[in-house]
Amino acid sequence: MLKSILQYILVFTLLFLLGKYVHLAILDDTIPFPLGKMYLFHYLFSLGICILICYLAYADILKEQLSLIYLATLFLKLIFFAILFKSTVFSEVSIPRIDRFSMLIPLILFLTVEVLFISKILKKI
Image (cartoon, rainbow, N blue to C red; front, side, top):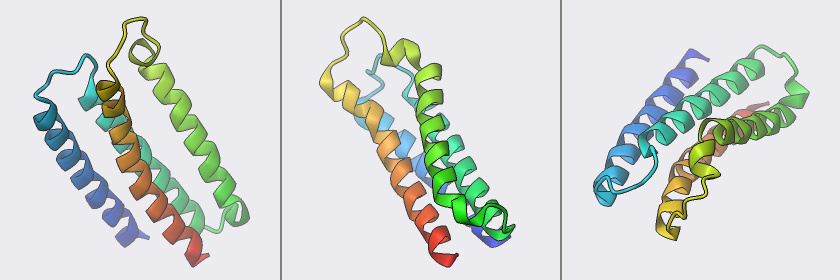
């Protein structure tokens, strides 16, 4: 389990650092919202979800409900994102489409890696 957790930390940290700085370099810091904080949110939450599911899988606690627990944590992730970034997501200021798409890039990156790790965990059960 420790090896898996270290792998999650390494992969998500590399994804966070590369994704954030490459994305900000491409956009030249001309975005009207805190993209770095969005990357940090997805980094911490995705890492936490993977560690939680890994722990529950190895501890034999609620093994049969792991997929439902994952769906619940995914739902909570979206709710917390909307709460933390409500001024950006629900603002009355019109955000151009390319900037709206830039908000989705961290979600897509981290969700893809998260799903790969979770599916790997669930296949082991």
